[in-house]
Image (cartoon, rainbow, N blue to C red):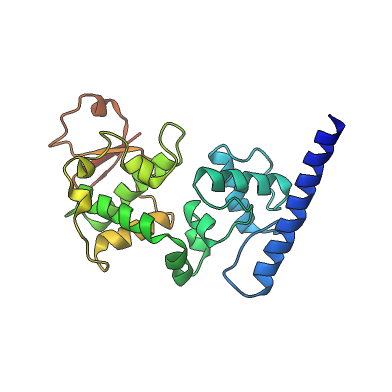
Length: 230
């Protein structure tokens, strides 16, 4: 028993020291900015608040990147299929909706091509012809579902959940899109944290919706031809 406790303690100490050194090395080399053990400031507060909202973090929103924040980041990274380093790099910031803290080129580099393309193709199939805000809103609904415990924890999982999106059912998700099209920009803006729906999990076209259940949802916004609700 004592050996087990000692091993766990040594593992935690090693992880903390390694992460701290790793984080400082990244910052000192001038590569993409990162938050790591010992970081402080408003960015850390924003990170802690988001992790707390999603149930990963139970500590104070104090702007100090301590052990509790590090472990929360590791859990978040594991849930999102990333390397569980505990260091909040650009990719982790994007997945946490904190892209506004990054330069535009850092956002584009960190947002994985697969996620951008998959989200953009879904937006194209679901909201082609909608105003730009409405396209971003569809992307935001998908990301809101990822952050909700009632839905899968990945973008692909949410999109391909059986019966969730017409674009998957009718094959429109497989239609090729122009890399310079508005749906790609909408996908990036949604990944960058813009949520015109203010947290909605559902949307529907009132003129074509056939589900009686969807009308039980509380409508928060109307953008273009879609209602957005919770």
